[in-house]
Image 1: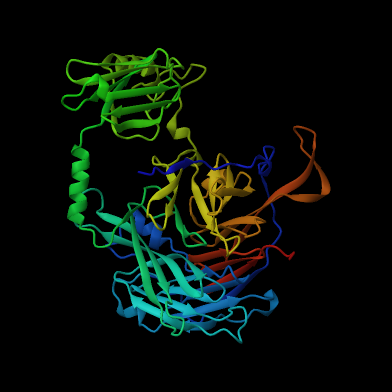
Image 2 (image 1 turned 60 degrees about the vertical axis):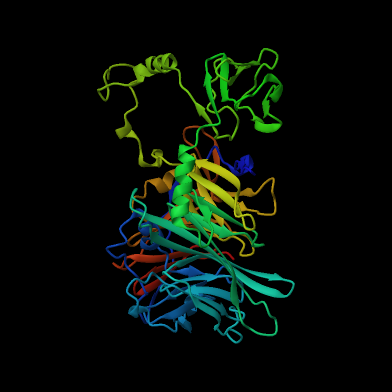
Length: 583
């Protein structure tokens, strides 16, 4: 059985600035342009039966404005007439009205349980589209940057059951066979699940292909489903279509099509009942491993090999337990015996005395750790001074205990830590896992449309941008940019709704639910001479914060950032904020 490789994200130190002093508020006005929409945005509000936090994450906070990463400064939205509307900006002073590029064939209002319509720009000439009723469209658009050759034409459409939204899609060309792979998200009710809300998240990995080059007919050739208990922060298909990466709080696993839920339930129950393969205990100096031997086992049937950081146990010619130990042992003084009750006892002497091992063999879950009652009592006694019935029993002491009420919001993290997982498309198994710990997910952005989307994580006070490279097995995630102190700054924005950054990393921006947009620019050289008052040194560059306030009381429904502009969508208006004037 293959085990997923535990990986870590490697931070590039030259991209960090330990002397960053903060953002200076700039009162320079930002040019802001407002366009009134012909018809309101097709907003779908949560129904009474969509009450969970997962429904809010997936549909309640949905971004109704879509950026076409293949063409700079081109955004799309879908209005309540079922029209896909596009605005492409060449010149701010000559803004036209958004134009209709496609109209959905179905009447959206006829479906009671519909979700928001979603669109993803698969390539420079292909688009995947969901009308929110459960129907998937594959559309050939022609070159979208050229209005003369642009014509949106449905190449495939099929009803796929319950409503879903599109998360990601890619276009593939193999041996003249064109295919489009897309990722769909549903939240469905599990009637048999008595724990929690009973809802689960379904990610469907669907591949549509044109098998016969003589006809234009596309059909579904592959359909795999992953299940989890939380909406993924990030989910994307690799450019070659061979893998999938997901950032989420709770893990996802593939389920086989047609798999009986009752069988699943029975399997999980039998797994719970299954007896551990071995039991182990530890003291500060050594470890004891106990293995129940099969009936009639003799000394000749057992082989135990000790290495400084490895153990190998063979019973009757079959490998019983093999792997790397959590820490080093003294192999010379480690030994084993067969007890009268037909059990094997292995004694391992720790090299690092006093070190507590959280596991015996790295990654092995087949054993059970038995705690010694005397050891538990000693640990409890050592920790006694850290607990008290009173919040601060001795306030006059030099170092009073930590008061949780004094923690700032940005210091409080979720109890469950996120993980980044890579799944293989052919084996449907997890190949790489990164435990993100307290590296809070912030947002994702497409820097290069031919690559996977980047994701931004909080590391201490900073926000670090990571570019996945599926082809580089040794260094799969590259640290490409840093937004200084942004991890700390964004935590104070309690009403934040959307977060984004420019594809060239020149600024990051976030908007609140109503009106306000905050822009955080990267440090730029100063034209005048400034000095740090405390240290007396000259300051060469300054990072600016700017605030834009929109003239509307409508809630913000969509938010996208390009290198030069911010696009903000409300129910009836589209706002353009000119952020960078240099090309």
